Image (cartoon, rainbow over all chains, first blue to last red):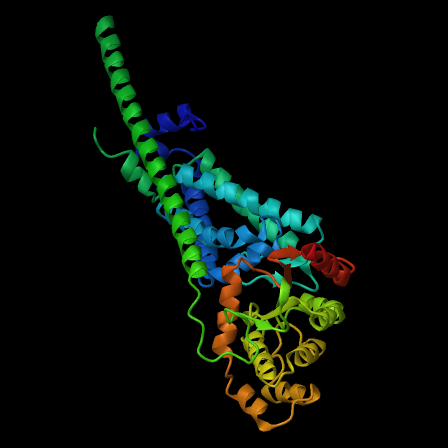
Length: 181
Length: 246
């Protein structure tokens, strides 16, 4: 797999010692990435755990979107929380950051598309993003806008990590750059 | 002099290359591990869904009069063509469907040849405050079935459907609805008060979920979903039944 976006930049940085980095700006310091990681880990972890509490409900919410056939909705609803929590753990630990961020980005793209599609079809539902969810009688559109905006912010955080997956306090540092020299 | 510097530079370059290659290999391994971990988590979720779906609890010992074969519903009539109705007493769309289909279902029951099975499911328990109105209403409806008044009682519960996120109808109101449906005697009241059919409602809901019924209202003819969200659900039902009869 040659999916590494900017191998030249990333690997030169890998070769550099940490002391070199102290000279660069805050943006290049790895701190924004750490913040992004933490944000994604907290939101995904919370969303996943809440939904795990009631998988039947999660399946029902997935069916409400009327995107996958009802027969498959329970499976989708049951699988998503576990994927979310797995990604949250990886991002929280900073392990395989780029891969995990790609997974999270894919997830948010799907979520945005799903909500947009529901909105476009004029359905009135609560997204169930953090558990619960259901049919709404009013105020659905405002909810859609907020949900999409939130997902786009999270998507941006994931993209930031894909572009520069080297962050502070990440397990990746220990695993990928052990002190061998 | 010149060659020495060159050699040192080349040396460093080689070391650098080796380091990079090692790092790339490790990064690949870690990524692969991450992908596997996420896939594993997804499998756990899928496994849990399967486990809960394929094994609904055993049917409870106490089921209402008129329970269908398999006990996961109430048989209003028996016949060659099977019609299943999955409704939740708190679901607003179910109210619309019930009212649109009431006459059509009555005709199917009266004219014979069709086995109509009602599944009073409780999917929306967390949408009342306090939670659990769907279960309370469905279990009261099962009590009404004991008195032979399920259809009448259902109609009243839907007509008086409380809004979501509210407390729902209280015990006294559920009992009063029974009197409205023509139920006399104290057995019904006792049945409602002791929530006798709560386990049965749970069972009906679990079996419905295991049949991949995730949403209410769901109406099936011979196991096939029919669209009851259109302008004329009764016509859609009649058409599906006629087709199944052929």
